[in-house]
Structures are given as structure tokens and as C-alpha cells.
Image 1 (tube, chains in turn cyan, green):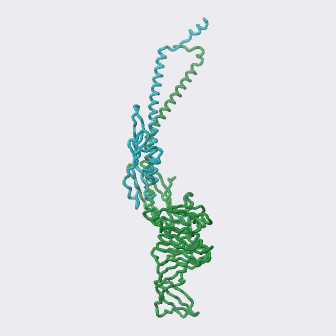
Image 2 (spheres, rainbow over the protein chains, first blue to last red):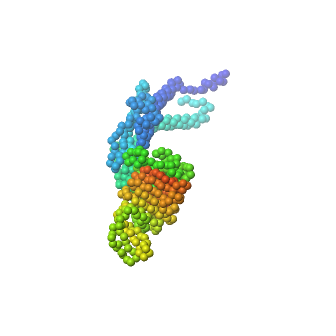
Image 3 (cartoon, helix red, strand yellow):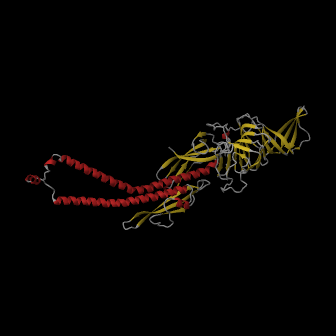
Length: 144
Length: 440
């Protein structure tokens, strides 16, 4: 028994202060990472929404260039399209405005529209929905 | 300084290095994660820019296509460049000419409906957005649909309205062999190219108005073809004194009346073009008279109402043109039951009755025709007999088989190679279309 006690007497450890300081630093780091992760997740969610929204707009532009009407496009797109702007958190608002025809190409004309999309891109911490809009100019031949 | 336990004292250097590696690895992971998140954060911004560039390129293509489609029917393209504002796309096109008359036959896109061998004019250009400029290749292709395997090709007659205007524009199918089950227009139908038996042949329908711009190779002779009058009707004798030219012949002048022109089978040129006149002024008719003298009839101001084609067994190409001004011509007669000469007819306007010389024999003729704004009536051999047209009919008007049986089958002659302008491909009118690709 005395032999064992003698052995532990030789053990040396960090002081409580050292451990507390180290733990404090570690907790600060963990808290920072947790906060950053939360922010990143929000950013990631926003990125996903924006990417989907822009991709949807590009597909709509391609469909219009292929000759479809705007009403047909909004009917066949995989996202729910609403006429109201803002459209709400679970839909998009796709607006097609006809521009003046492009002339000067010979006897024919090229048709042009302004295609605007509004979609839910992010949500504030208090639950407020943030919308983003993007406008593109799209052209298609009148002979098709 | 605290001293480690004796047991660990032997490993303290190793522990330190191991710890440092763990810290280094963890740091790298954290940095990579943070960098990845930063990349994702900027991704949406880059996506927006990329989307704009792609749409701008598509806009440039649309503008270039519209410009080319405007220019192509004229047969030539002028250099042109334009750009939309704010970097929303633009193009630049080089000039090109001889689009309809181009005689370069080459292998190309195997997926177009006109086979992989077509006439092609390659035109280089550029498509651009706000940042990038891509080389673009526009391939202006053309070929006769009949010779490409569609022996019955129907065009929309409207020039501004793509609907068939009235019931006047129709094909009466009942006696067109191989197409008895054809559906309503518009259609693109067919299960076999030949259209023989009970199966439907390839049937081409084009919503575009019919364009009869036929090639005009410079080396197509317009003569070297024997033309005679085979019968007359109503011509009047206009000269009281026959102008005797020598002791063995005398000439009688006739004027007016309707006549039949016969294009004889002798054709020495590999390719010949004959423009059917509306009124002849210097056609001679020869007949042996009383054994001593040859009576030569000279006809002037006579309306050509019937054109008789005499069948031949050569494979020379003959291009017949009956312009819209040839209003008197109303009948085309096929004489001889067999013809291998490559005959192509272009008829514009009016009416045309196509008949065989007899109705009790079957006729096999190599013949293609484009009938634009023309109502055609077919008078074919009856009962078990038929007239077979290898080549076919391209029309935007009525084709009515009034009598007998008509069979149209596709051209079996292999496509030409290179620039063999003596081939029927070079004189038949064509359909033109546009293909494009990004230049490598």
C-alpha cells in the first residue's frame, strides 16, 4: 500500500487554472465554429435557392427560345409559378415582358422579351423571407 | 517545469510530433471547410454571370439564324455583324454566294432527313457575349427532296398563313400506289422508301412555302435537243405562194393554232435544259410529200398546248422548264413505255394534265417534277396497268389521279460525289436548310 502511494506521489498534473484557461479557449473556438457553421448553413441554403432560381429562369429562357409561349412555360416548369410578386416562400414569379422586335436583320425580325424572375432566396433569423429578382433579355428568331 | 512520468519520458518527442500533426491536420480541415464555404458563397454570384453569358450566346445564335434565314432564299449572304446592348449577345457572319447553285456534294450530318450527303455551303462566323467570342460554323445545306428519297413531297401553299387555305389544296390518294393510307395533312409518314405493295412510302411534308429556285449550272446547254411538231390543230395557211427553196422541197407557212411539241429521244449531251415556249415562232414540220418533194411546214405564232416526251434508254439528264408565262401548255404526254433518261420538270402556275400515250400498257419512267401553284391531273393506264414514276412529285397544289394507277417511287440512283454537274441532282430544285455548330 505504501508502495502504491509512493508511486502516485511522483505524479505531477496541470493546475486547475491551466485546465480552465485551456477549456475556455477550446469552448471559445467551438462556439465560434458553431456560429460560423450556422451562418454557413444559412448561406448554403441561400446559395441553393439562388442557384435553383437562376437555373429555372435559364430553362424558361431556353423554352421561350424554342418557341413556347410564356403561359405554356409557366405551366410546364417544375416549380410553382405565381403571377403575384412576391410569390411566397414556395413559388416563383416569372414575368415575361415583350420588347420591341429587333429589326435590321433583313426582311425578318427577331423577337425579344425581358424575362424577370422573383424567388425566395433566403430567410432571416426572425423568419422574414428574402426575395431576389433577376432580369434577362432573351431573343429568338421569328422564323422557326 | 513539470517532468513527465517516467514511462512517457521515453516517448515525449514522439508525442509532441504526433500532437503537432493532429493540430496541423485539424487546421487543414478547418481551412478547407472554410474555403469550401467561401467558394459556395461566391458560387451563386458566378452562376448569375454564367447564366447571362449562356443566354447571351443563345441570343447571338438566334440573331444569326434569323439573319441567315432571311438571306438564304436569295441565294447569297452578305457580311453582317451586330451586337445587342449590355452584352446580351451578337454575331458576325461572313458573306457567301451560290447557295442554290452550289454543286459541291459532300457527306455531312447523317441525322438530317435528307441523308448524309447533301449540297453544302460552309459559312464561318462568330457568336459573342459580353466577354467571350466563339467561332461558329453555319452549314447551309440543300438537296432535292425527291432525289433524297421522298417521292411525294407536299408543301404548304400559303405564304403568310401556314394553314392549308381550302380544300382545293389536296392530293387525291386513292390511285397513288403506295400512299393509299396517307393521313390528313400535315403529316410526315412512311415505312419504306419505295412505297410498294400495301406499305406507305416516304412522304414529305413541309410547312414552308414551296421554293422552286433550281440550280443553273453554267455548263448546262440549252440546245442539243431535237424538237419537232407531231400534230397541229387549227393552224392557218398564210402564204399563197409556197417559197420553194430547191427542187426537192418546198415550204408552207402556217400561223396560229395549237400544236404538240415532241422532244425526241436523241440527246447527245449528258445534261440539257429546255425551256418550253408558250408560243413557237420558228418550228418546222417535215413530211414526205408525193415522193419527189419534201413538204416543210413552217409554223409561227402557234400556241404550244401539248408537250410529248419520247422515252429514251440512256441516262442523260433533261431539265424541262415551263415558267408561269407558259400558260398555253396544259398537257404532258409520255410516249414510249420505258424511259431511263433522267427527266425533271419544273412547272409554275396554271394546270397540267399528265397522260400516257396509251392506257393499255404499263409505263416505267424515270421522271421527277416540281409543280408550283399548279393543279395537276393524272391520266394513267387502267386496269392492271400503271405508270410508275421513279423520282416523284413535289407540289403545293392539287394532284388528282383522275384515271388509272399512278405509282411514285423514290430515286434509286446513288447520290453523286464531289462536283459531277452532269447529274440530275445538280438541276433539280432543292429544299434549303440551316445547320450550325460551334467551331472546334
